[in-house]
Figure 1 (cartoon, one colour):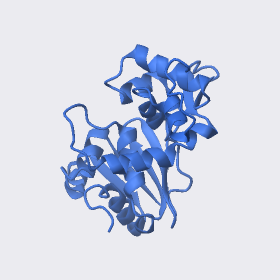
Figure 2 (tube, rainbow, N blue to C red):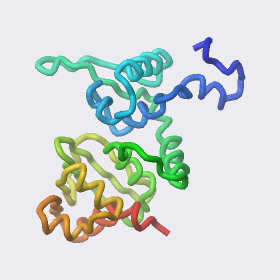
Figure 3 (spheres, helix red, strand yellow):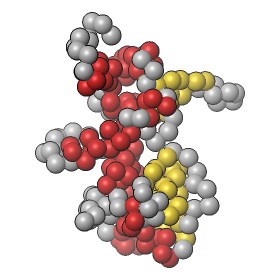
Length: 215
């Protein structure tokens, strides 16, 4: 770290000494919703090479931002996850996402699934989406919890969900960006929602957060 340090005792500079390298914060972004395997990180960070991701994982592990552990048999795979200190970056990244949303959209790959869900989490009005929901997006399952104070999304099954959604990543992206009406996605069978009518309505509101932001 000493070779890249700003040599400045300011907290901002010391933070950048740790997370200021290219791709470092995006590695953190990909772990905010829950642990991932290296291959999952590669899927979410399509513009980064395996060597770069490996280097950032080593650096972020050495500085205490992330940690890794081995899953027991029969999985026998290493997963990476944020430490408690690393998780404190969540509101920072959510705010950066909102701030950066005002910048021009560059050419390149679309947002990763985790990035899209974090955008929904950071932009949703908690009062309008309060409840418990479960999202089945491709092979991934996410729990959405809305309280009067905040909305959280985590890569795990929901406890007693009031509504569930099943779709694929492409359909979800098209709906969230206003390219495909929810009704059309349901009619085609590419998206389904089940549960209490009011909960389904609130879940629909969450999906449309980026098209119809609160306020």
